[in-house]
Image (cartoon, rainbow, N blue to C red; front, top):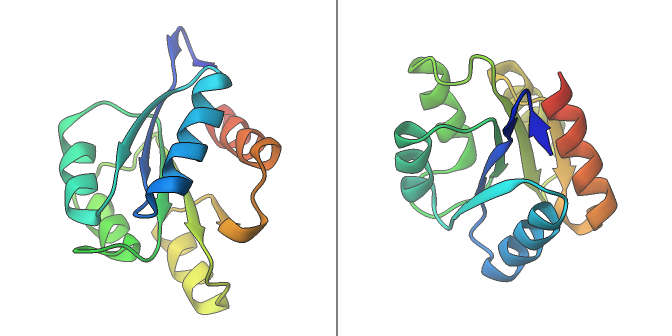
Length: 128
């Protein structure tokens, strides 16, 4: 899928490699460009270094967690014009609220995600 006249670029930060592979394959099949990172430190470096349109961000990550990544992106002004979808198996209202305040547009529970739901959520986030 395209955002404007270019292919939308997604950064996926997910430490569960099998899940990351599935999500990446589904999104590439839907026409997105996907870069994978497997820990928060690697993810933050990738976000700072490259162009991207959407971040799929796991909350619980090695080295730097998802909330800290969001906070650093906000502090550095890197979320403007970009969307963030949080991925987690934790359904805490407190975490959802904290992520929303920091700029996350959606919160997906990993155990409930099927390929159609993921592609729809990404399409919706990119169209805003």
